[in-house]
Image (tube, rainbow, N blue to C red):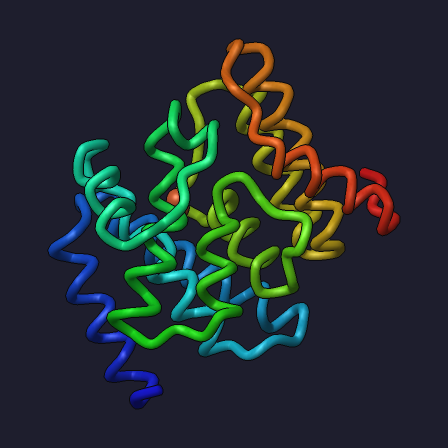
Amino acid sequence: MENINELLNRINNDLKNALSEKRYKHSLGVMKKAEELALIYGIDINTAKLTGLAHDIGKEFSDEEMLKYVKENNIQVDNVEAVNVGLLHAKIGADICKKKYNFTIEMQNAIKYHTVGNENMDLLAKIIFVADKTEEGRNYKDEAKNEQLQKVRELSKKNLDEALLYEIDSSLIYTIQKHKLVHTDSILTRNKLLKDGANK
Ligand SMILES: [Fe+2]
Ligand SMILES: [Fe+2]
């Protein structure tokens, strides 16, 4: 992999072109949060920063662009992604980062799993998932959602699995209340966390 600062700069410049101001700031926020969590949980800081920064690189493709990208790059679309095309930004982001920045499989997987989760998430993937949901720029108009956000922020400093479980539970409840499709990977992730002993 090229020099870390050169690579961070290159991704940073690409994001400025690919994303709105708001999403660009979110990306910087996720990088910062991923760095904090990497320090707490003892994983490589540069890996966490790079992955956090780049995680939403495919987020602002239109549905048509996403469908074109997956077709041209042989990315499999599951039955939930076929309906909620926007979810594909995770797989697309991972593919872009592999081809453009030579990201490792571990970093690609963390990006792939950052939206609905995956039962095989490792520490980096969990950190990126939680950083995405808790970065400092995030806040909600809805008071209940803001309370949940504070709770996940608190938990993330002490127990990453419990933060992740709480976040997944909250978003599953929300998704069900809105009568939207639930991705089976979120359920499998939740069950895995419970089996592994998370209980908040
Ligand atoms: Fe995302
Ligand atoms: Fe994000």
